Image (cartoon, rainbow, N blue to C red; front, side, top):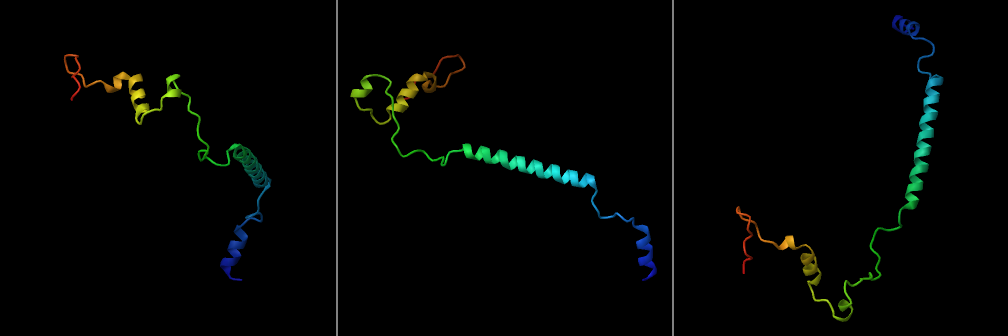
Length: 105
């Protein structure tokens, strides 16, 4: 044994590197928290649907008026109906004097 080994052996206390009761308590608390998190996450995952894809079955479309049951809808009719419900969407830009420009065409 050299003099340096003897000095290092004398300076270190006996319980260096050993965990105390506080370390064991902290380890148990962390293990309990991890267990509860896994349990909670598995409960939430069980509530999720098997797939988020849209079903392949045709969706039921409820007509707005009885005439829609007889007459077939023309292509683009849904867009026209949406614009009719929100007429401000088809107004022209306003001028400084408050009037709207006539539609082009």
